[in-house]
Length: 626
Image 1 (cartoon, rainbow, N blue to C red):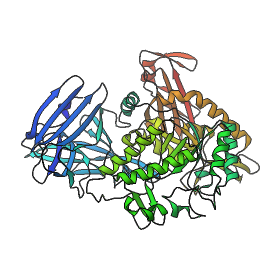
Image 2 (tube, rainbow, N blue to C red; image 1 turned 90 degrees about the vertical axis):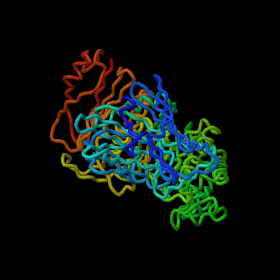
Image 3 (cartoon, rainbow, N blue to C red; image 1 turned 60 degrees about the vertical axis):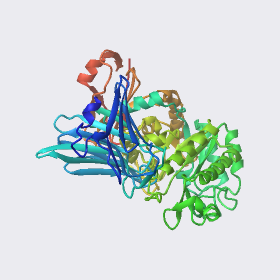
Image 4 (cartoon, rainbow, N blue to C red; image 1 turned 120 degrees about the vertical axis):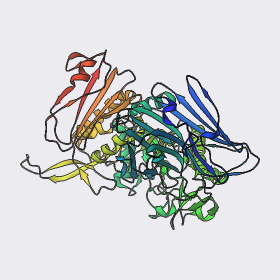
């Protein structure tokens, strides 16, 4: 991709240049370009106006371009900015735009729209993915060229694609990515430096998964993560209905199956049964739940050779909590009940950091799951939460530096805070509260369009349904069913292969009553866990392609850097066929073992692979190893 092809060099049009930066005194456009430096590795463009310096740096690689922009106030007075965004511009108006809507249990709902006037995607406040995801793809409908922008948000962000006139009958298409300008009056003080959201840019013709493997490969090269663990979490076992004996019995079963982390979710803290009113205090419940035996449980779990973890939510406090009543200046309003910790306030940040460290050391924690269940829509500083985001990053970075062996998992009412920038602060994400295998697969396959697969932590949530009449059986029998939403109010039935294969790709978890499962199912689980431990290093370093994205058939291909090892999953829902031909992408010159034969890669790509024995709600696996 050539940088010059993604912006218009014309000082006579309002959208000329690489930025849309506006103050009350001036506007940055192409006429403000001072200099640019071009090398094999990067291109740097320096704009200047009234001692405000704005720099765009494009870092080039074979498959991806990373854009890093910043602004420096080199004047002797404060400059107030009302628009701050990076700009991309293309000639013509024959484009379609892909965006993703995002909400609780319905993450990453994406679609293409024909761009006629303007399309906007934006998050609604302090959580980076509340309302929409920071991801947009634009397709030239005449050539099928697809350019994808994966945004690393450091503020409340906004993406806008629009058709604008150049002159007479000529039009251009402009994409602007940056600070949400709703009520924006950001003060940039003398000498202050401001970073815009970083952007990963890919170019290709794939409108199914946008060649997301290019982003994944770049991420693997730039970031090192811990191994993919096997986790048990108490939440969907019985929500907050926990006791010492019940959890210890689950931990004993975990030790038999090979689980590596045991995590107590919400409900361990608070007063009596009203723990929701104590959110923000993070003090053990002595009257209910574990009745003051949390440290005893930690010791007992560790004695089983399993690491121990807790859930907490550093961002939020209830209005009735002691934390809020004692330090109301540390928080700002969300609604009548919820308050958010002001991470832009250094004193508030130090307070929650010390409280978190106290928990880690008191309970000998190896794992922390950090949730984030409320969004503030408006920043009282009118700065699009940029200082809040910065303080939040500092909190997690300091925590990871102090406890380098601590495994950090994120959640935000599911996936309302799951983006590439946030992923730098944790090891994995609980990607949705909807952990059903069918809905979960839909959500997951749309995640891998914009985040690496090894970031996504999936759980098995299962139980026994008694006396189910089955058409082929003479008498009713017990059946293993799977929770198909966030609350156990909906269940579904899939094959064991479907359920187990769904878990693969990243860290895997269990959140159910393991003790009550049938012995033959427990044996299957144990074998699956043992096998995944042998496979997980491959998945940790694998990229993934979405080969088929259909309502009833989803095909995922995991592969290593050289297409030496390929692991292909064919998931089915409602189908009217018993076979399918798939067309994986492999190395044309390599020979692969397929059905006990050696087949040249180019023949596999041209002729495909016939997969038989396809049934409903099932998963078939094809492995291609050279």
